[in-house]
Length: 154
Length: 139
Image (cartoon, rainbow over all chains, first blue to last red; front, side):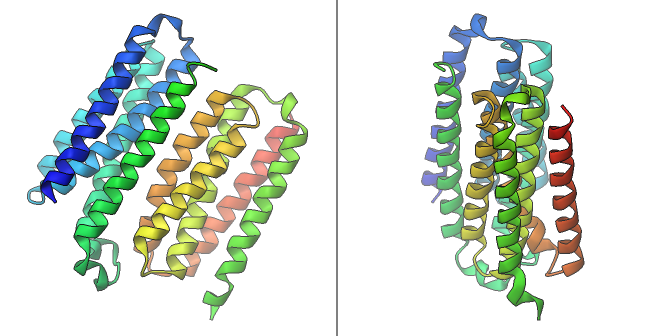
């Protein structure tokens, strides 16, 4: 279980790193509108996914994990946004913070379903739900990054 | 008593959204990209929230499947409305529908089958579609 989550985390970080490298090579080509949209979608989905998986990995003292992951997600948004202009930096920072907070909320609800008053039947298959949401989030990240990468050619 | 009619409510929402899509499809050449970005954000986000709340009221035992289906519906609606105009508006609508669709079943589960909340959301949805058509007409 832990190995599966760690491999998902590495896969997501690898996807983010690769797309950042590709964008860094071509950063002179963008107009500011495309830079803003690229920073918004990339930082949102990546920070949601990363903070959800980190929240799964450390079950105790969730508030410290939440603070650190939200700061790291804001830094991811600033990194993606600073490729183009200050306008896209603001958009990337905002979407990174929103994605980080939402990923933390989703991770906490899946780990402890009673805070959203879901029925008690969920307590038996928490591990299965964690794996399903991790795989689904990684799938969504892959599709989003593919769309953003494809828009370089359009 | 009201739980049998939730399916019809979802069906009506999708029907109203399809009518709005067909209306926008006729006049899509007149709309600039700034308005197109806001239109795709609003349409994708609100249909995702209403669908998520209705589905989690109807099936409270399948949280995972409801979240996945709601996310796909939000992504599809935002992407369709955005692809009326441009590739980049499609990306904007896609991202916003994804965020709202992941969040919506959690709101619905925390609201504990309150029908006042559902009526409020329906009012916001209809008002947003009305504003959308109004702003598209007056450009």
